[in-house]
Image: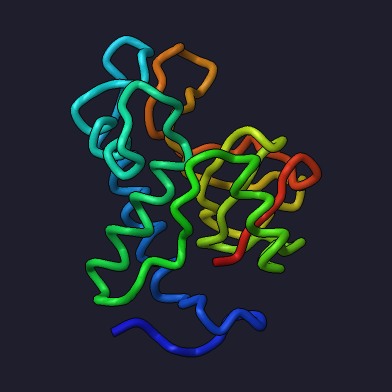
Length: 163
């Protein structure tokens, strides 16, 4: 069962759930999950897409939700990630529920420029960059959308939701 200790004033947030979601996300990245043809589709991508009931749509938030859902199933607890699959509405939810935090930490949900969702894998680096694992993104070296670890998001460009 998940650790019931509160994190930073959020009693529903479980450090164990967040840590497990990060592990699951990193394992997906290690498997090399990619879209078929940069079309928001692929065998594994379609699994993430299924949580929202649609295929062939942007899937960054669906990936993050799916990771938290898998973690919750593994730990036998509820998923604290709301069924919101777009960055803007998720950010608005975080605001309304007073879940936005300034300092990112492992397991927070990162919202970049109101349009992309990722999972924070650790605290901000000294240069102000937040390490993350992200779905529906690419690295810049090759244009192949998939699941990647990134160190490119600046804290100043992001909002962070602590679930």
